[in-house]
Length: 91
Image (cartoon, rainbow, N blue to C red):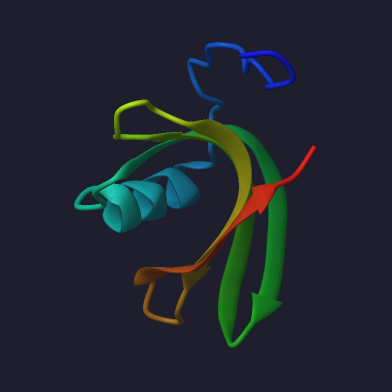
C-alpha cells in the first residue's frame, strides 16, 4: 500500500545473556504479536534494573501489521523479569 513503511527482515540482535533470558521469560507465552529484538539500547538501575530494547513487531492477524516498538523489561532484585511497556515508534 502506498505510504506504508516496509520494514526489513530481521534475524534479531544479540542481547546480553541476562537480557536474552528475560526476553524469553517475558515473551514465551505472549500471544498476538511476535517481537524480534533489533537493538539493545541499555539499562537503568532502579529498585532492580530496567532494560530498553527496540524491536520489530508483527501482529498475528490477517492482514498482519508490522511496526517498530520500544520495549522496557524489568528485572527485580531476585532476577525475575516482567514487561513494563511496549510503545510503538511512530515514523
